[in-house]
Image (cartoon, rainbow, N blue to C red):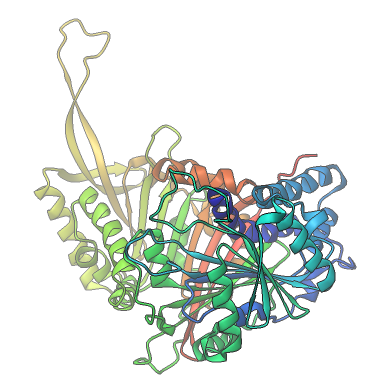
Length: 579
């Protein structure tokens, strides 16, 4: 039961998101007069279940619409020949979510569920006892429009296994219902792990509005304490309310995350102090439907030491994107890379876990390229820039393309000359290479090749292997890790990412005034990411409907307002439902 219950709560997080994704996947099929038009009906809702969640909770995620409406919307959205596949996806989701608990959605949940479902990780270690294994506390809250039907389901579900073991505990006026983990006359298995507390599915009905589930009775007791002492709850927290007020988009989903606590959990680091919750270390996310996919708006409180608002610096995509090929698996574009790096480094100084992850990533790139990125690259990029991960069908590893504005920047000219010197110091040959109607600078290394088949003398051949190439084009310096990548970069504006229809659709849903883009083409990058992160294959197996429909992910930030850094993420979908 322990593993099944834990799997249920793990799966629930992905399932809430997948409900949204499946609904958004084929939105463009919806008629403007559809009675299921959630796009027009979305409101600025807040999770009412936050009153049960402690303010130091590591994470909370809420679905603010009845799941049946999303299912019906999805069915209407897709063309008739694909509706069977769309219905099957929702059935698959229901089965994966509830099978481990022996629940059937249509029989046990659908009759009484209303318009909110909230899951919270209330603590990373329920008993905070260093002598046993850390065990998170999970709290699941439904709103109900039929409390009598909900109460009947709660009792019947737990009593059906072994009625003699059913415990009804009255706690501060609320009945907690669960199976006894050690009933009289029942022997405990010898191989029980004494270092951990066994999961015990616990339920409660609070008032005539809420149905609560938790993985331990103590989690529900804490939830009751939280709702009865307002100062303990997330809903009454000032910083939480500030985040809510800064997120003005209509929504059907909401989440708030304590970043240090969640980072510690993911990286298996020591659990932060119980009182470590700070607004500057939290992240809030809202989810809403658009005609092409799912839009997420985020808010992160910034340091109080910077009181002045920060306005976005761009009103259109940077010109550097004209040298980024449309086939790019990943693209990053913005302005003043040096300033961005300094702001990011300052923000992460107070968080060892996130800072460590960033340092590891930078160190891997530096060891591969033999340069100090902040000093030798970031420091001189003050104009607009773009970076691309360019897949090669004929090579296992992708190429990189980097474009930086150099006009009126003497530091840039000196820095590029320094990179040529660094290449020589690494044993590379630096020389000019004809390339079409222009001359490029190439970094090459002579390597020993195999003897040619038509040679009889058996002598080895020497080959010049290109490690990098760069050239000046108008106001920009273009760097690439291969001749093929440079050819793609200079292939012409018509074949550039900024002219690509999918990219244009991806940024159309985001604010026109922003600080640049992070664009991930999932259709192109999936094989590359799977090779680098094998664990993603497991995630894809669990969240198959999500990945089946994902076309791209685009992220942008758009300044600071009311002491909150604001960003948006857009998940663009492609409909692949089977007929």
